[in-house]
Image 1 (cartoon, helix red, strand yellow):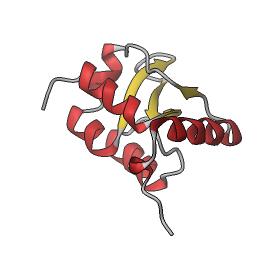
Image 2 (cartoon, rainbow, N blue to C red):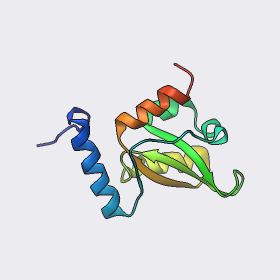
Image 3 (cartoon, helix red, strand yellow):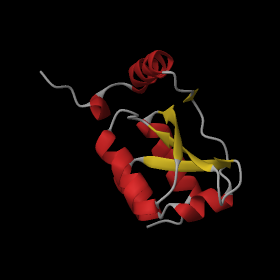
Image 4 (cartoon, rainbow, N blue to C red):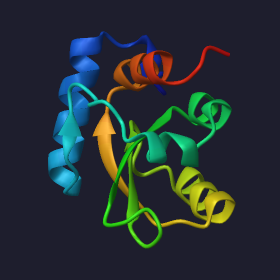
Length: 112
């Protein structure tokens, strides 16, 4: 039986993602901070919305650093491959709930 995580209560989703983050060695964000404008410019709004991701900031410089990205599914290898192939960058991932990622996209990207 497959369960669609979008149909689960938010508190259950947060607990499950927090546990996944701990087991997999990722950080977990309950609230996504205000992003670096340079990070937002790297990932188009349409791509972020379609893939449920949110760029937060760079570790290191924009030119040679890694883009820190909020994701709800850090084991989605297809998404990771797509990011690396399409944007030719290095990424680090932080886990956040799909609801929090949608909220951050709605607040920080132009409506579309």
